[in-house]
Image (cartoon, rainbow, N blue to C red; front, side, top):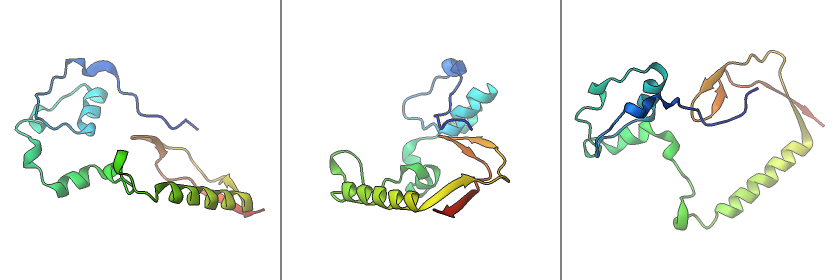
Length: 126
């Protein structure tokens, strides 16, 4: 299996210049770097203030941060993370996990490399 890494973008985008105030989506930059083709009409006349918040929330699901960031983090974040570690260690101490023989590897490239069809695990009580 390949390690979980950020997707490497080829340095073919050095010719790409974007004006200040334009909004660029990661998928469009990826397409430029993969195919070498840039569709200028997708970015023409697109400004941040023209977009609704619902559109931005749908476009960037990874922007959801339940505990906050920086100096405004939730005071219960450390307690919740410690509780998760305890629960995970209890599960790992009582069960054995192995990859199913029916598993077939098919990588999908995104923020991390993930399996297209998921990973089937066999769980056995120890």
